[in-house]
Image 1 (cartoon, rainbow over the protein chains, first blue to last red):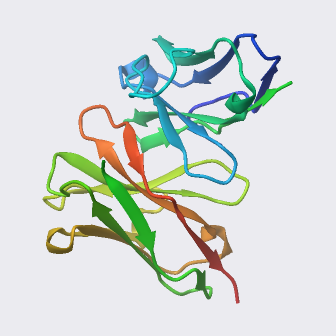
Image 2 (spheres, rainbow over the protein chains, first blue to last red; image 1 turned 90 degrees about the vertical axis):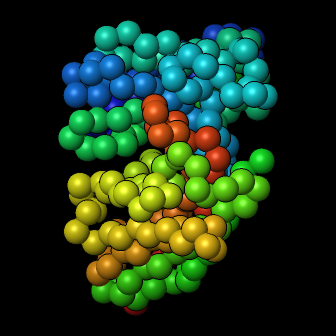
Length: 110
Length: 119
């Protein structure tokens, strides 16, 4: 059972927009700790996708964006492309548990 | 460009000790970052194991703390992970990475090392 809750799967057609939620509590996201997102393509290590809830590392397309409000955060992917099919994880910090991850969301591009 | 590379035995027997090393290249290990270990059991999500600073300060996942030790060797530009009394539940891909000391994002990851615990 992950401290951060994500939907197990989402799907969308090419060109559409999908959103992945990450729900925490008052001891992590709600306490003001930052949220980061990672993309994991099949068989390889996760890659930093969004940091500090809405910043993109160099090389990440602006189709990817993040937001945070209250005890939750979201990752939005616009103009969905076939290569976006992957697992996505949110990460934050919890005052009791330390570094925490969401359970991961599998994105299927139809 | 910082690069990290895990190394260590891929197969362990139950009750043994898991030992992995992460070599850091392309940048100094003596910077203000957390040098971090995360694992991922087959087909499952990510679990934070712990982290160490270049000065040797450590933080561990409370659920693993009694069995985990992370150390750093600045002279060799590497940091290490030890997990004692392993069981099949410790079978996972083990990743090392660099973590931001202010907000905690993990920006550079190793490719991972698969460790299997089996008799």
